[in-house]
Length: 97
Image 1 (tube, rainbow, N blue to C red):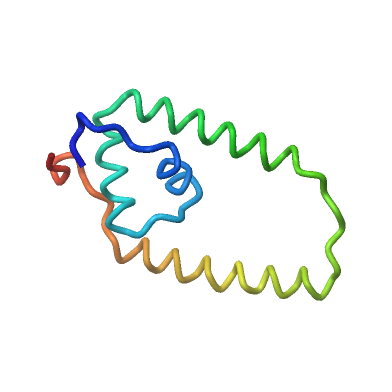
Image 2 (cartoon, rainbow, N blue to C red):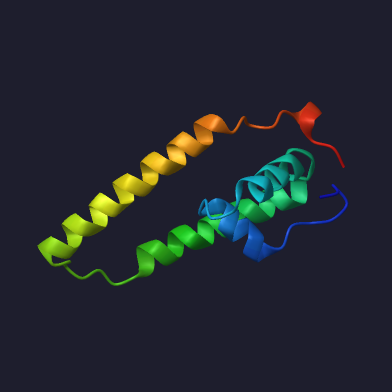
């Protein structure tokens, strides 16, 4: 990804939510190191996601569904943490246009 090309808002949202593949995430991370405009847009996207999360009407979750949901999150979180440990964070010198 060239520093002259900006990242689409949808891709920034996926990045903010941690839903990009490792290669795409690393490309976005490298681009953000050099692009002020995309960093500002990422900040706006994160703010929008927070506002959306806070603005959703909350309903109590049935206890069994809640336990299953939390168990799944824990399992996926462990996988993501292990994946992140195996994947080095690109340094600025590793980011090539």
